[in-house]
Length: 111
Image (cartoon, rainbow, N blue to C red; front, side, top):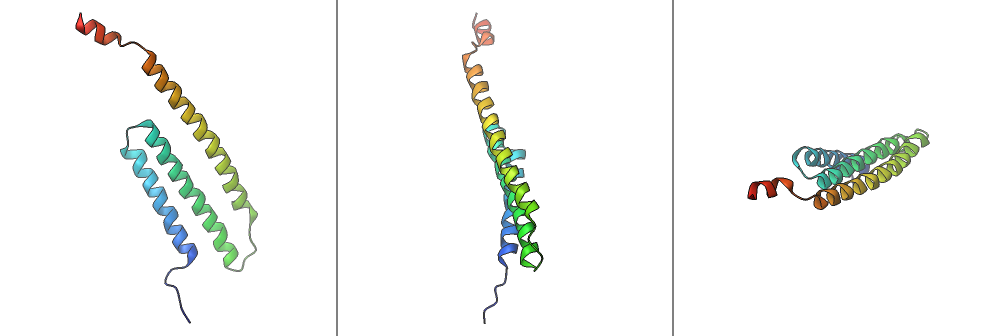
């Protein structure tokens, strides 16, 4: 008879907390907007995983499975995907606008 030291739910919960920590670290430390967007997505994925683990632990404990956490996670994934697409599009537009503007300050400094 073998006993595991850590259950699957505990391991997934720890991974979710690690993802949230990595996402927060990236949001705080990284100055680039694209890296902040990716860090925010990692943070959100950790939160979704944590919600899934919480819903799973209730079902594994013998309680009836609750579909509400699953619905919240699925809705959150869809909203996060659309928000990421919008933010990435805005980053591309901002980058194009910054590259298209002439540097008026440099011309005045050289003259």
